[in-house]
Image (tube, rainbow, N blue to C red; front, side, top):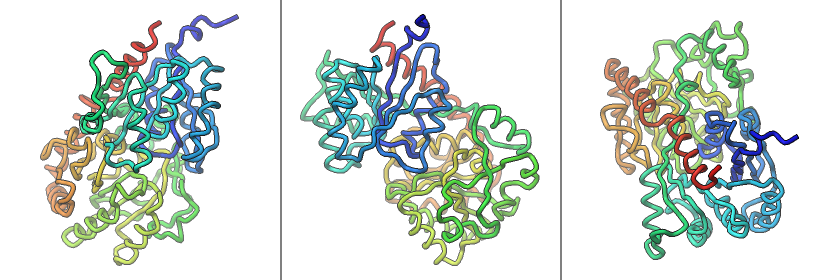
Length: 429
């Protein structure tokens, strides 16, 4: 007998090229956890498989995950297969993320007349020529284009100047800013009780098993250990995470969570950190993540002679313990959409010192939740970090303001409510 509740659910297929640990990918399970799954059924189809993926997180969030192995150019040969998949599962709506999946979704959905939602996570001038033109040529063949920030929305409009939006036309442009689950992303004050809270919410807790305590930045020690475990059992949290990493309890910690790719400009991040150490030699720096720039960044740190002040902890499924020992979130990015990692840091009461890249300037009010510089004036970031390190009252006020800002304007509940409105408008029940 058919379940009447399941029959009336809106079936949404998330389409994305890969399931790495970038912000766009992580939003899929995080939004699903907040969605009303009595009204929505979620599936995710991806094409490029990599070791450090978030498939398990999607499945825990109630999403059915499917893989059609393919590379970038191979996606052009997946149209028929994906079309048949959509028909077989009777999806009501396709929600694509990032250009390659967007191009594929339009090719599939336009033939089937399936509503298409596309989320743009970056400004268009940052894509390579193939992604840019493929995205632009097919862009109007969808129902709703979601921009994660006003700057991303502006780039859509500017790049459509020769193909303007038509009043009453099919495609609608909507800004839905990224959000964070503020109930989950909270600063850990008591590790013993917090580990129970995290486990009760179904978030994997991990401890560092293989890394050295004194100098965890060493690439020799971490190579091949992409996701060290943290805080696995009650008996292992008697020492604080700072102690495990070899950081003095009173030291100020400046950190960053990122995929190590060129847009993050982590080589500049290290330069800024070294400049801070000239005035604040007791400061420590944490990098959470991994990527193609890893070896170069670690070598830069080793060559500086200051590696004892740096801590690379690899990819972490649960970043909350690491965020909870940070005081300042430092970002030197050249461009961004609206970085999820920064919002998560703010939710964990961390002040932000960053370049005004992408949507960062829409979140941070200079002098309130942190400090901002122009993208080309990245060297000024060091002075702001020094200022906050030397003025604990100002730092604490900004840390509190950061969480307040996220709760009021960038909560996951607000984001999901806007997404559900989009879905329901396209697929009325």
